[in-house]
Length: 292
Length: 199
Image (cartoon, rainbow over all chains, first blue to last red; front, side):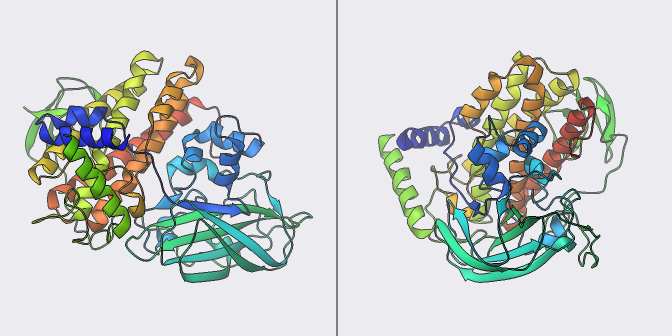
C-alpha cells in the first residue's frame, strides 16, 4: 500500500506533467487529533451513533443541516493557527464548531443533545487523542448557572474550571475536575492548545445534565471581554500582499464567457462562466480570465 | 522505481521517529523530500505537498455534479472550482519540481503537524450513490467540509511559510475557499424554508 503510493509520488516527481498523476493518486489515510470521550463531546456522540444513521434527534438534525463529514472527521474540530487567540477568532454562537462551517451542526441550539448525568463535586473526565501531541495545555470550562441551552453559547457563558499545563497526553488521558453546583443542562467546554511545534488548538462541547430544570435563565452578567471583532485572518505579522483593487470587476457578479472587465489597469476577458468571488481576481485566476 | 519507493518509506519512518521537527522551522531533521531550501522552508513544502492531493480529491468531488441533478448555479460553481483547482495544482506541482521536491509527501508523514484532512474515495462513492432528491445538499455539504479543511491548510502556510509565492497562493486559497463556503451556505439556505442554524 505504502510502496504503491510512494511509487506514484516518485513517478509524479519524475514526469513533467506531474499534476495529472498527482490528481489521480489516492491520498494517505488521515491520522490525527482528538476530542472529549467522557463526558462525550457532541461530535463524539454523533460519531458513536454513526454518521449515516444517527439515533438521537440532535445528531439527526446536525447531519441534516451540515452533512456527515464532520462526524467522520470527529477528531479534527480544530484551528491550525489558533495560538491562544480563541476568543478573538471564534465568534459567539460558534464555540462548539470552532467557527468552522464544516462543524456548524455542533452549534445547533437544542435542549435534547444527549447528555451525561453528573453531580457537583469531583468528576473524572477522559480525553481521547488519536494523535497525542506532547507539551499541550488543556483548559476546562462549564456554563454558568442561569445559562439557557436554547440560546447561542457565548464566551461570556463559560466559567473557568481548571487548566492543566504542559501535559503529555496519551491516547486516553484522564483528569479530575471539581464541578460546581448546577441545575439542569450544561456544557463542559475544553480547549486543547498545542504549545510546541504548532499553533493548533482543539475545541469540544460536552453536554451534561445535573437533573432538574435550568430554572429561570438569565442573560450573561459579564459582557464578553474580548468581543469577536477580529475576523480569523492571518496573524498580524503577515504583511498584506493583496493590492488595492480598481476596475469594473466585482465580486458577486455573474460573468459569461466573452465578458470583458477591467482590473487594476488591465482588461480581461472571461473564459469560463462563473460568479466572481474574492480570491478569483482576474489577474491571478488564469483558469477563468485571460488578458484581453 | 522500487529503490525510490524504499527510500521514501525509509524517510517516512525516520519522520515518525523525529516527529518532523517544528512547523515553520527550517528543520534539519526533516528528510530531503520535505526539507526546506534556499528561500523556502519545510512549511512551504508541506503545504504544497498536502494541497496537491487535497486538490485532486476536490476535483474528483466537483466532477460528480456532471452526472447528478443540481441547480445551474451549483453546476457553474462546481465547473469553475474544477478549472481553478486544476490550474493551481499544476502551479503547485511545478513549484515543488523547481525545488526538487516530490509533489506529495510520504503517507502519514504529516500526522504530527495536524494531519491531512481528506475526502476519501469511500466518501466520494457514498455521495455518488445518493438519491437525486438528496444529492445537491449532500454534495454542497461535502464540498463545504472539504474547502473548510483547505482554509485550515492555507492558514498554516500564511502563519509559518517563507516563500513569498507560496504565501501569496495560500492567501488566495484562503480567500477563494472562504468565499465559496459563504456562497454555498447561501445556496443551501435558499432552498430551505427555514434558517438551518435555528433549531
